[in-house]
Length: 123
Image (cartoon, rainbow, N blue to C red):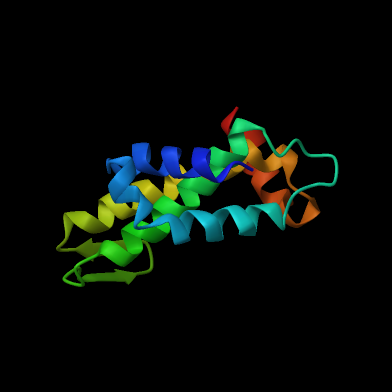
């Protein structure tokens, strides 16, 4: 997996310049390493879906780290109340991460079978 591509995709997702994104390259490297550990033996490591999935994972971690800590929410059963619009945006980022991982699922080994189920459900 090309670390430059992962970083470029992360920059696009986060809205950061490549220079700004470079400060967060450790997140991109960690996400890429995590995905590489899940690859099937016959997977094409140059597949663009892998770089996007790694960038999505890094972006989610970035957003978690960038929270200001002021979010407050309560969930009881099916009812949840939140006083922060940030929590909704973070949930959108998590959904994006899951969709990017689901797209890469055919390249991942059996430990990620649940992602393939999500991928087939989306299609």
